[in-house]
Amino acid sequence: MIEGFPVKIRHSAGAAALLAAALTLTACSDGGEAPSEDASASASAEASDSATTAPEPTEEDIAALESVEVEGEPGEEPTLTFSDVSVSVPTTRVVTEGDGDELTEGKLVTIQYAAYDSAGERQGSTWESNAPESFSLGAEGYDLLNGPLTGQKVGTRILLASPTVDAEQNPTTVVNVVEVTDVAEARAIGEPVEPAEGLPTVTLAEDGAPSVDIPEGYEAPDELVAQTLIKGDGAEVTADQSVTAQYTGWTLDGEVFDSSWERGTPAQFSLQQVIPGWTDGLSGQTVGSQVLLVIPADQAYGANPPEGSSIEPDSPLIFVVDILSAS
Image (cartoon, rainbow, N blue to C red; front, side, top):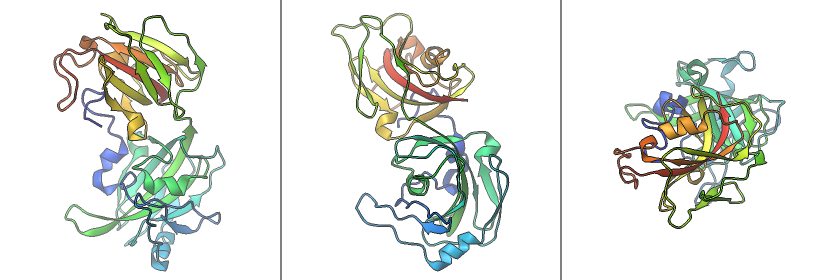
């Protein structure tokens, strides 16, 4: 993703940025197999892009993760107690099995998590920063979670230990405790709305990814257009909230310049950080809705488009946004 889309500064930091290299939840690596029903430790073993299989954990890896004590009520940040944990490959253990909705590929999964170093010192937490993270189950870049969480249910709590390197490039291990707090559709679901005539026409692929057909000679309006295409039945979005969304953005000649669909996972950001056309266009919409935004240049990037982008100065923009959640 090019820095600045659709935000002026950056996406909402979230825990992945907060914990930086110490947290390997979203690191691209070989995937993981689903945890066993008896909640014993297991290793990531999903096929990689090269069709090779990740190595299984050793008995020592399994024993190391079993030594981690987890205390705390569901829904609250747990406390981990351990020292000198080290694993040779990504290793997972189901601590608590959830009893909510099932997690299946393509669904939007929301998690809270905390990271600990190999000595048992807590490095950071989404509970502490009030920044739960959502991603599409099965999306590239979440390989360490896709296998362990697929087939589990909301409320599941797992441990994930992964080998990594510290700031001095010395081998070490990071231990994450992860709790699934919600699951939802990763696309807009609601009642179709007939759009006004003359607007760009939106067509959806089977997975929900949008494309647009821009009428010949179409000129962007002087004022923001926020056309609801699908009306969701969720809560109304307010300008002070953070939103999880799928979106694609086009210049007026039909060129895609950014797309969460192409990255394989929704974006999260504060409506106080985005371009004015997003803040104004999404405020008042409902969760579950899909919205076509036609944004005049002065409510987009004006004379200062993001560096390295294909957007020309003073360009109007078109977005199709699926609002998945707001908090």
